[in-house]
Image 1: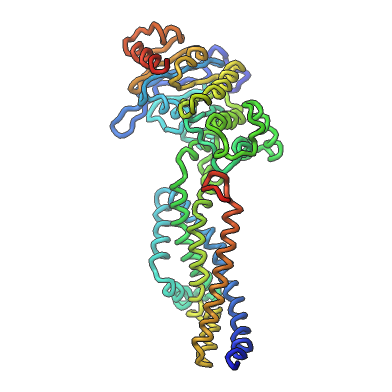
Image 2: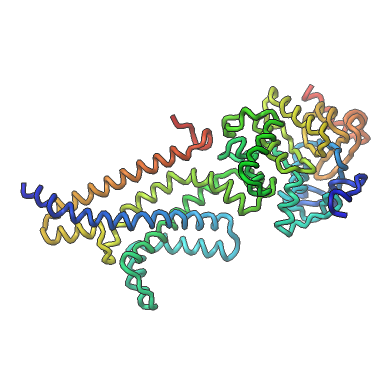
Length: 224
Length: 257
Protein backbone atom coordinates (compact mmCIF):
# COMPACT_ATOMS: atom_id res chain seq x y z
CA UNK A 1 0.00 0.00 0.00
CA UNK A 2 2.86 2.28 0.82
CA UNK A 3 4.48 1.35 -2.48
CA UNK A 4 1.35 2.26 -4.41
CA UNK A 5 1.18 5.64 -2.65
CA UNK A 6 4.87 6.17 -3.42
CA UNK A 7 4.43 5.33 -7.10
CA UNK A 8 1.26 7.41 -7.61
CA UNK A 9 2.34 10.32 -5.43
CA UNK A 10 6.00 10.71 -6.36
CA UNK A 11 7.06 8.43 -9.19
CA UNK A 12 4.32 9.16 -11.70
CA UNK A 13 4.47 12.99 -11.50
CA UNK A 14 8.26 12.91 -11.87
CA UNK A 15 8.09 10.42 -14.71
CA UNK A 16 5.43 12.53 -16.44
CA UNK A 17 7.86 15.47 -16.41
CA UNK A 18 10.56 13.18 -17.74
CA UNK A 19 8.28 11.78 -20.41
CA UNK A 20 7.55 15.26 -21.71
CA UNK A 21 11.29 15.92 -22.00
CA UNK A 22 11.83 12.55 -23.68
CA UNK A 23 9.10 13.26 -26.24
CA UNK A 24 10.56 16.69 -26.90
CA UNK A 25 13.90 15.01 -27.57
CA UNK A 26 12.49 12.24 -29.74
CA UNK A 27 10.20 14.21 -32.06
CA UNK A 28 12.75 16.63 -33.57
CA UNK A 29 15.44 13.92 -33.59
CA UNK A 30 13.07 11.63 -35.48
CA UNK A 31 12.08 14.22 -38.09
CA UNK A 32 15.52 15.71 -38.66
CA UNK A 33 17.22 12.32 -38.43
CA UNK A 34 14.97 10.86 -41.12
CA UNK A 35 15.39 13.92 -43.35
CA UNK A 36 19.16 13.79 -42.85
CA UNK A 37 19.16 10.06 -43.56
CA UNK A 38 17.31 10.58 -46.85
CA UNK A 39 19.80 13.29 -47.88
CA UNK A 40 22.84 11.24 -46.85
CA UNK A 41 21.58 8.00 -48.38
CA UNK A 42 20.66 9.71 -51.66
CA UNK A 43 24.02 11.49 -51.81
CA UNK A 44 25.84 8.25 -51.24
CA UNK A 45 24.02 6.56 -54.13
CA UNK A 46 23.84 9.39 -56.68
CA UNK A 47 26.55 11.77 -55.50
CA UNK A 48 29.96 11.79 -57.14
CA UNK A 49 33.58 12.49 -56.27
CA UNK A 50 34.55 14.20 -53.05
CA UNK A 51 30.93 14.86 -52.06
CA UNK A 52 30.09 11.19 -52.01
CA UNK A 53 33.27 10.39 -50.08
CA UNK A 54 32.41 13.13 -47.59
CA UNK A 55 28.99 11.57 -47.00
CA UNK A 56 30.55 8.10 -46.67
CA UNK A 57 32.91 9.60 -44.08
CA UNK A 58 30.08 11.21 -42.11
CA UNK A 59 28.25 7.88 -41.91
CA UNK A 60 31.44 6.06 -40.93
CA UNK A 61 32.07 8.43 -38.03
CA UNK A 62 28.52 8.68 -36.70
CA UNK A 63 27.92 4.95 -36.91
CA UNK A 64 31.38 4.16 -35.64
CA UNK A 65 31.59 6.27 -32.48
CA UNK A 66 29.55 4.97 -29.55
CA UNK A 67 26.59 7.29 -29.06
CA UNK A 68 27.56 8.14 -25.47
CA UNK A 69 30.97 9.27 -26.69
CA UNK A 70 29.30 11.40 -29.35
CA UNK A 71 27.08 13.01 -26.71
CA UNK A 72 30.11 13.71 -24.49
CA UNK A 73 31.82 15.39 -27.42
CA UNK A 74 28.74 17.51 -28.28
CA UNK A 75 28.27 18.60 -24.67
CA UNK A 76 31.66 18.47 -22.95
CA UNK A 77 33.96 18.64 -25.96
CA UNK A 78 32.62 21.50 -28.07
CA UNK A 79 33.07 24.18 -25.36
CA UNK A 80 36.82 23.67 -25.95
CA UNK A 81 36.34 25.34 -29.34
CA UNK A 82 33.94 27.92 -27.96
CA UNK A 83 30.63 26.23 -28.82
CA UNK A 84 28.35 25.91 -25.81
CA UNK A 85 25.26 23.75 -26.30
CA UNK A 86 22.53 23.25 -23.72
CA UNK A 87 22.12 19.63 -22.57
CA UNK A 88 18.92 19.50 -24.62
CA UNK A 89 20.52 20.90 -27.80
CA UNK A 90 23.59 18.67 -27.46
CA UNK A 91 21.33 15.61 -27.06
CA UNK A 92 19.23 16.46 -30.11
CA UNK A 93 22.40 17.06 -32.19
CA UNK A 94 23.78 13.70 -31.13
CA UNK A 95 20.54 11.83 -31.82
CA UNK A 96 19.95 13.50 -35.21
CA UNK A 97 23.45 12.64 -36.47
CA UNK A 98 23.40 9.08 -35.22
CA UNK A 99 19.87 8.49 -36.48
CA UNK A 100 20.63 10.03 -39.90
CA UNK A 101 23.70 7.82 -40.31
CA UNK A 102 21.68 4.66 -39.66
CA UNK A 103 18.67 5.78 -41.74
CA UNK A 104 20.99 6.52 -44.64
CA UNK A 105 21.85 2.85 -44.94
CA UNK A 106 18.21 1.78 -45.10
CA UNK A 107 17.56 4.49 -47.70
CA UNK A 108 20.66 3.52 -49.68
CA UNK A 109 19.58 -0.11 -49.80
CA UNK A 110 16.10 0.88 -50.91
CA UNK A 111 17.42 3.22 -53.62
CA UNK A 112 19.61 0.44 -55.00
CA UNK A 113 16.57 -1.85 -55.16
CA UNK A 114 14.66 0.45 -57.54
CA UNK A 115 14.81 -0.85 -61.11
CA UNK A 116 17.21 1.17 -63.32
CA UNK A 117 14.42 1.50 -65.90
CA UNK A 118 12.68 4.00 -63.61
CA UNK A 119 15.58 6.42 -63.99
CA UNK A 120 15.72 5.84 -67.76
CA UNK A 121 11.99 6.49 -68.08
CA UNK A 122 12.33 9.73 -66.11
CA UNK A 123 15.16 10.90 -68.34
CA UNK A 124 13.26 9.84 -71.45
CA UNK A 125 10.42 12.28 -70.79
CA UNK A 126 12.86 15.11 -70.13
CA UNK A 127 13.12 15.09 -66.33
CA UNK A 128 16.54 16.01 -64.95
CA UNK A 129 18.37 13.47 -62.80
CA UNK A 130 17.44 15.49 -59.70
CA UNK A 131 13.76 15.63 -60.66
CA UNK A 132 13.71 11.90 -61.40
CA UNK A 133 15.24 11.11 -58.02
CA UNK A 134 12.88 13.51 -56.26
CA UNK A 135 9.63 12.54 -58.00
CA UNK A 136 10.19 8.95 -59.12
CA UNK A 137 12.96 7.16 -57.24
CA UNK A 138 12.63 8.51 -53.69
CA UNK A 139 8.86 8.07 -53.35
CA UNK A 140 9.39 4.40 -54.15
CA UNK A 141 12.57 3.98 -52.12
CA UNK A 142 11.16 5.59 -48.98
CA UNK A 143 8.28 3.13 -49.05
CA UNK A 144 10.73 0.24 -49.34
CA UNK A 145 12.92 1.65 -46.56
CA UNK A 146 10.08 2.31 -44.15
CA UNK A 147 10.18 -1.00 -42.23
CA UNK A 148 13.92 -0.58 -41.62
CA UNK A 149 13.62 3.10 -40.79
CA UNK A 150 10.83 2.20 -38.37
CA UNK A 151 13.27 -0.06 -36.59
CA UNK A 152 15.73 2.83 -36.28
CA UNK A 153 12.98 5.10 -34.94
CA UNK A 154 12.20 2.55 -32.23
CA UNK A 155 15.89 2.43 -31.33
CA UNK A 156 15.81 6.22 -31.14
CA UNK A 157 12.99 6.10 -28.58
CA UNK A 158 15.21 3.97 -26.39
CA UNK A 159 18.60 5.58 -26.95
CA UNK A 160 17.04 8.94 -26.11
CA UNK A 161 17.55 7.64 -22.54
CA UNK A 162 21.27 8.41 -22.96
CA UNK A 163 20.48 12.14 -22.77
CA UNK A 164 20.59 11.96 -18.98
CA UNK A 165 24.31 11.14 -19.26
CA UNK A 166 24.85 14.75 -20.32
CA UNK A 167 22.44 16.10 -17.68
CA UNK A 168 19.38 16.42 -19.86
CA UNK A 169 16.95 15.01 -17.33
CA UNK A 170 14.38 13.04 -19.27
CA UNK A 171 12.44 9.91 -18.40
CA UNK A 172 15.45 7.77 -17.41
CA UNK A 173 17.11 10.72 -15.62
CA UNK A 174 14.02 11.33 -13.50
CA UNK A 175 13.90 7.64 -12.71
CA UNK A 176 17.55 7.65 -11.66
CA UNK A 177 17.00 10.58 -9.30
CA UNK A 178 13.93 8.98 -7.74
CA UNK A 179 15.60 5.63 -7.30
CA UNK A 180 18.77 7.10 -5.78
CA UNK A 181 16.68 9.00 -3.23
CA UNK A 182 14.40 6.13 -2.22
CA UNK A 183 16.51 3.06 -3.09
CA UNK A 184 13.35 1.58 -4.63
CA UNK A 185 15.20 0.64 -7.84
CA UNK A 186 12.88 -2.23 -8.78
CA UNK A 187 9.65 -0.24 -8.47
CA UNK A 188 10.99 2.84 -10.20
CA UNK A 189 12.81 1.22 -13.09
CA UNK A 190 9.99 -1.27 -13.72
CA UNK A 191 7.67 1.70 -14.07
CA UNK A 192 10.17 3.52 -16.32
CA UNK A 193 10.51 0.38 -18.44
CA UNK A 194 6.75 0.11 -18.80
CA UNK A 195 6.55 3.73 -19.94
CA UNK A 196 9.19 3.02 -22.66
CA UNK A 197 7.27 -0.09 -23.64
CA UNK A 198 4.09 1.96 -24.04
CA UNK A 199 5.97 4.58 -26.04
CA UNK A 200 7.44 1.96 -28.35
CA UNK A 201 4.06 0.31 -28.79
CA UNK A 202 2.56 3.64 -29.74
CA UNK A 203 5.32 4.33 -32.25
CA UNK A 204 5.06 0.85 -33.80
CA UNK A 205 1.33 1.33 -34.19
CA UNK A 206 1.84 4.75 -35.79
CA UNK A 207 4.40 3.30 -38.20
CA UNK A 208 2.00 0.53 -39.12
CA UNK A 209 -0.73 3.07 -39.86
CA UNK A 210 1.72 5.08 -41.96
CA UNK A 211 2.83 2.01 -43.91
CA UNK A 212 -0.78 1.09 -44.62
CA UNK A 213 -1.51 4.63 -45.65
CA UNK A 214 1.39 4.69 -48.14
CA UNK A 215 0.77 1.26 -49.60
CA UNK A 216 0.53 1.07 -53.38
CA UNK A 217 -1.28 -1.88 -54.91
CA UNK A 218 1.25 -4.37 -56.21
CA UNK A 219 4.30 -2.25 -55.41
CA UNK A 220 5.35 -3.87 -52.16
CA UNK A 221 2.71 -6.46 -51.53
CA UNK A 222 -1.00 -6.75 -51.29
CA UNK A 223 -2.41 -5.94 -47.91
CA UNK A 224 -5.70 -7.28 -46.75
CA UNK B 1 16.94 27.84 -89.54
CA UNK B 2 16.38 26.02 -86.28
CA UNK B 3 12.74 26.65 -85.60
CA UNK B 4 10.01 24.48 -87.00
CA UNK B 5 8.42 27.08 -89.29
CA UNK B 6 11.51 27.57 -91.39
CA UNK B 7 12.52 23.92 -91.32
CA UNK B 8 13.06 22.46 -94.78
CA UNK B 9 10.80 19.40 -94.98
CA UNK B 10 12.91 17.58 -97.49
CA UNK B 11 15.71 17.41 -94.91
CA UNK B 12 15.71 14.60 -92.37
CA UNK B 13 13.89 15.46 -89.13
CA UNK B 14 16.32 13.20 -87.25
CA UNK B 15 19.82 12.49 -88.44
CA UNK B 16 22.10 9.99 -86.74
CA UNK B 17 25.63 10.20 -88.09
CA UNK B 18 28.64 8.04 -87.36
CA UNK B 19 27.53 6.95 -83.88
CA UNK B 20 29.91 4.60 -82.12
CA UNK B 21 29.54 2.97 -78.71
CA UNK B 22 31.90 0.61 -76.93
CA UNK B 23 31.53 -1.19 -73.61
CA UNK B 24 34.96 -2.27 -72.46
CA UNK B 25 36.53 -3.89 -75.48
CA UNK B 26 33.19 -4.69 -77.13
CA UNK B 27 32.03 -2.51 -80.01
CA UNK B 28 28.26 -2.28 -79.64
CA UNK B 29 27.63 0.36 -82.29
CA UNK B 30 30.14 0.64 -85.09
CA UNK B 31 29.89 3.91 -86.99
CA UNK B 32 26.10 3.82 -87.44
CA UNK B 33 24.40 6.46 -89.58
CA UNK B 34 20.68 6.67 -90.22
CA UNK B 35 18.35 9.50 -91.11
CA UNK B 36 14.63 9.72 -91.07
CA UNK B 37 12.29 12.22 -92.70
CA UNK B 38 9.16 13.67 -91.16
CA UNK B 39 6.31 11.17 -91.09
CA UNK B 40 8.56 8.30 -92.06
CA UNK B 41 8.52 4.96 -90.21
CA UNK B 42 11.68 2.89 -90.06
CA UNK B 43 11.79 -0.59 -88.57
CA UNK B 44 15.01 -1.98 -87.14
CA UNK B 45 15.41 -5.74 -87.37
CA UNK B 46 18.30 -7.99 -86.53
CA UNK B 47 19.39 -10.66 -84.07
CA UNK B 48 19.60 -10.03 -80.33
CA UNK B 49 22.80 -8.19 -79.53
CA UNK B 50 22.84 -6.49 -82.93
CA UNK B 51 22.76 -3.10 -81.23
CA UNK B 52 19.14 -2.10 -81.94
CA UNK B 53 18.38 -1.17 -78.34
CA UNK B 54 21.70 0.59 -77.88
CA UNK B 55 21.13 2.57 -81.07
CA UNK B 56 17.69 3.73 -79.92
CA UNK B 57 18.99 4.58 -76.45
CA UNK B 58 21.92 6.46 -77.98
CA UNK B 59 19.54 8.56 -80.04
CA UNK B 60 17.95 9.69 -76.77
CA UNK B 61 21.32 9.85 -74.95
CA UNK B 62 20.11 7.35 -72.36
CA UNK B 63 23.33 5.71 -73.48
CA UNK B 64 26.04 8.27 -74.17
CA UNK B 65 27.63 7.56 -77.56
CA UNK B 66 31.44 7.59 -77.61
CA UNK B 67 31.40 9.53 -80.84
CA UNK B 68 28.99 10.68 -83.51
CA UNK B 69 26.35 13.36 -83.86
CA UNK B 70 22.58 13.37 -83.54
CA UNK B 71 20.70 16.18 -85.27
CA UNK B 72 17.06 17.03 -84.69
CA UNK B 73 15.65 19.25 -87.44
CA UNK B 74 19.16 20.00 -88.57
CA UNK B 75 20.34 21.12 -85.16
CA UNK B 76 23.05 19.04 -83.47
CA UNK B 77 22.21 17.94 -79.93
CA UNK B 78 24.61 19.23 -77.31
CA UNK B 79 24.62 16.38 -74.80
CA UNK B 80 26.99 18.23 -72.49
CA UNK B 81 24.30 20.79 -71.62
CA UNK B 82 21.76 19.32 -69.20
CA UNK B 83 19.08 21.81 -70.17
CA UNK B 84 19.55 21.27 -73.89
CA UNK B 85 19.43 17.53 -73.33
CA UNK B 86 16.19 17.70 -71.32
CA UNK B 87 14.60 19.91 -73.99
CA UNK B 88 15.72 17.52 -76.70
CA UNK B 89 14.47 14.43 -74.86
CA UNK B 90 10.97 15.86 -74.60
CA UNK B 91 10.89 15.97 -78.38
CA UNK B 92 12.00 12.38 -78.81
CA UNK B 93 9.59 9.96 -77.13
CA UNK B 94 10.96 6.62 -75.97
CA UNK B 95 9.03 3.40 -75.49
CA UNK B 96 10.76 0.59 -73.62
CA UNK B 97 10.42 -3.14 -74.00
CA UNK B 98 9.57 -3.52 -70.31
CA UNK B 99 7.34 -0.39 -70.16
CA UNK B 100 9.12 1.29 -67.24
CA UNK B 101 5.97 2.90 -65.92
CA UNK B 102 6.54 4.77 -62.67
CA UNK B 103 5.44 2.04 -60.26
CA UNK B 104 4.20 4.34 -57.51
CA UNK B 105 1.84 6.35 -59.71
CA UNK B 106 -1.51 5.58 -61.32
CA UNK B 107 -1.84 5.53 -65.10
CA UNK B 108 -2.98 9.15 -64.91
CA UNK B 109 -0.12 10.07 -62.58
CA UNK B 110 2.38 8.53 -64.99
CA UNK B 111 1.17 10.68 -67.88
CA UNK B 112 0.76 13.77 -65.70
CA UNK B 113 4.25 13.78 -64.15
CA UNK B 114 6.12 15.08 -67.18
CA UNK B 115 3.43 17.66 -67.91
CA UNK B 116 3.72 19.09 -64.40
CA UNK B 117 7.49 18.90 -63.87
CA UNK B 118 8.91 19.17 -67.38
CA UNK B 119 6.35 21.26 -69.23
CA UNK B 120 5.45 23.13 -66.01
CA UNK B 121 1.73 23.01 -66.75
CA UNK B 122 -0.63 23.68 -63.82
CA UNK B 123 -1.82 20.50 -62.18
CA UNK B 124 -5.49 20.62 -63.14
CA UNK B 125 -4.71 21.47 -66.75
CA UNK B 126 -2.10 18.72 -66.78
CA UNK B 127 -4.73 16.33 -65.48
CA UNK B 128 -7.09 17.17 -68.36
CA UNK B 129 -4.32 16.80 -70.90
CA UNK B 130 -3.17 13.49 -69.37
CA UNK B 131 -6.75 12.25 -69.51
CA UNK B 132 -6.93 13.12 -73.22
CA UNK B 133 -3.76 11.13 -73.87
CA UNK B 134 -5.16 8.13 -72.02
CA UNK B 135 -8.35 8.40 -74.10
CA UNK B 136 -6.20 8.42 -77.22
CA UNK B 137 -4.79 5.00 -76.28
CA UNK B 138 -8.20 3.77 -75.14
CA UNK B 139 -7.47 3.67 -71.42
CA UNK B 140 -9.53 6.50 -69.93
CA UNK B 141 -11.37 3.95 -67.79
CA UNK B 142 -8.06 2.71 -66.31
CA UNK B 143 -6.80 6.17 -65.34
CA UNK B 144 -6.80 5.46 -61.62
CA UNK B 145 -5.25 2.00 -61.80
CA UNK B 146 -1.69 1.41 -60.66
CA UNK B 147 0.78 -0.33 -63.00
CA UNK B 148 0.48 -3.59 -61.07
CA UNK B 149 -3.26 -3.55 -61.75
CA UNK B 150 -2.85 -3.25 -65.53
CA UNK B 151 -2.15 -5.93 -68.13
CA UNK B 152 1.10 -5.78 -70.10
CA UNK B 153 -0.67 -4.38 -73.14
CA UNK B 154 -2.36 -1.71 -71.05
CA UNK B 155 0.95 -0.78 -69.41
CA UNK B 156 2.58 -0.32 -72.80
CA UNK B 157 -0.33 1.83 -73.98
CA UNK B 158 0.01 4.00 -70.85
CA UNK B 159 3.71 4.38 -71.58
CA UNK B 160 2.84 5.50 -75.13
CA UNK B 161 0.38 8.03 -73.69
CA UNK B 162 3.10 9.24 -71.31
CA UNK B 163 5.48 9.82 -74.23
CA UNK B 164 2.81 11.47 -76.40
CA UNK B 165 1.94 13.94 -73.64
CA UNK B 166 5.32 15.56 -74.18
CA UNK B 167 4.38 16.32 -77.84
CA UNK B 168 7.33 14.44 -79.33
CA UNK B 169 8.42 14.99 -82.92
CA UNK B 170 9.88 11.51 -83.18
CA UNK B 171 9.07 8.30 -81.32
CA UNK B 172 11.60 5.57 -80.64
CA UNK B 173 10.04 2.21 -79.84
CA UNK B 174 12.35 -0.47 -78.48
CA UNK B 175 10.64 -3.83 -79.03
CA UNK B 176 7.38 -2.53 -77.58
CA UNK B 177 5.60 -5.88 -77.80
CA UNK B 178 8.40 -8.33 -76.95
CA UNK B 179 7.42 -8.62 -73.29
CA UNK B 180 3.74 -9.17 -74.06
CA UNK B 181 1.57 -12.27 -74.21
CA UNK B 182 0.63 -12.94 -77.84
CA UNK B 183 -3.02 -12.01 -77.34
CA UNK B 184 -2.03 -8.56 -76.00
CA UNK B 185 0.27 -7.63 -78.89
CA UNK B 186 -2.62 -6.60 -81.14
CA UNK B 187 -3.88 -3.77 -78.93
CA UNK B 188 -0.42 -2.20 -78.76
CA UNK B 189 0.15 -2.61 -82.50
CA UNK B 190 -3.21 -0.95 -83.15
CA UNK B 191 -2.14 2.10 -81.14
CA UNK B 192 1.21 2.30 -82.97
CA UNK B 193 -0.49 1.93 -86.36
CA UNK B 194 -2.88 4.77 -85.54
CA UNK B 195 0.09 6.92 -84.53
CA UNK B 196 1.76 6.21 -87.85
CA UNK B 197 -1.43 7.07 -89.74
CA UNK B 198 -1.58 10.35 -87.85
CA UNK B 199 1.85 11.18 -89.28
CA UNK B 200 4.16 10.40 -86.35
CA UNK B 201 7.78 9.85 -87.28
CA UNK B 202 8.93 6.58 -85.74
CA UNK B 203 11.87 4.25 -85.40
CA UNK B 204 10.72 0.86 -84.19
CA UNK B 205 12.86 -2.12 -83.24
CA UNK B 206 10.89 -5.34 -83.46
CA UNK B 207 10.98 -9.06 -84.18
CA UNK B 208 7.40 -8.96 -85.51
CA UNK B 209 8.28 -9.22 -89.18
CA UNK B 210 4.68 -9.39 -90.39
CA UNK B 211 3.80 -6.22 -88.55
CA UNK B 212 6.98 -4.52 -89.77
CA UNK B 213 6.04 -5.25 -93.37
CA UNK B 214 2.69 -3.48 -93.03
CA UNK B 215 3.93 -0.53 -91.02
CA UNK B 216 7.38 0.36 -92.29
CA UNK B 217 8.38 2.71 -95.06
CA UNK B 218 11.80 1.23 -94.73
CA UNK B 219 13.32 -1.79 -92.97
CA UNK B 220 16.83 -1.57 -91.58
CA UNK B 221 18.80 -4.74 -90.92
CA UNK B 222 21.43 -4.54 -88.18
CA UNK B 223 24.02 -7.02 -87.03
CA UNK B 224 27.12 -6.74 -84.84
CA UNK B 225 26.57 -3.05 -84.25
CA UNK B 226 26.31 -2.14 -87.94
CA UNK B 227 23.58 -1.37 -90.39
CA UNK B 228 24.09 -3.96 -93.11
CA UNK B 229 21.22 -3.19 -95.40
CA UNK B 230 18.15 -0.97 -95.63
CA UNK B 231 15.32 -0.53 -98.05
CA UNK B 232 11.59 -0.97 -98.62
CA UNK B 233 10.09 -3.83 -96.59
CA UNK B 234 9.36 -6.09 -99.60
CA UNK B 235 12.92 -5.83 -100.75
CA UNK B 236 14.64 -6.42 -97.40
CA UNK B 237 12.25 -9.08 -96.17
CA UNK B 238 12.03 -11.06 -99.43
CA UNK B 239 14.76 -10.12 -101.89
CA UNK B 240 17.57 -8.84 -99.73
CA UNK B 241 20.91 -8.39 -101.44
CA UNK B 242 22.97 -9.85 -98.61
CA UNK B 243 22.90 -13.55 -97.85
CA UNK B 244 23.03 -12.69 -94.12
CA UNK B 245 19.85 -10.61 -94.28
CA UNK B 246 18.00 -13.29 -96.25
CA UNK B 247 19.03 -15.96 -93.74
CA UNK B 248 17.84 -13.88 -90.79
CA UNK B 249 14.52 -13.01 -92.41
CA UNK B 250 13.74 -16.57 -93.43
CA UNK B 251 14.64 -17.89 -89.98
CA UNK B 252 12.49 -15.38 -88.21
CA UNK B 253 9.63 -15.95 -90.66
CA UNK B 254 9.80 -19.72 -89.97
CA UNK B 255 9.78 -19.12 -86.24
CA UNK B 256 6.80 -16.79 -86.34
CA UNK B 257 4.89 -18.74 -89.01
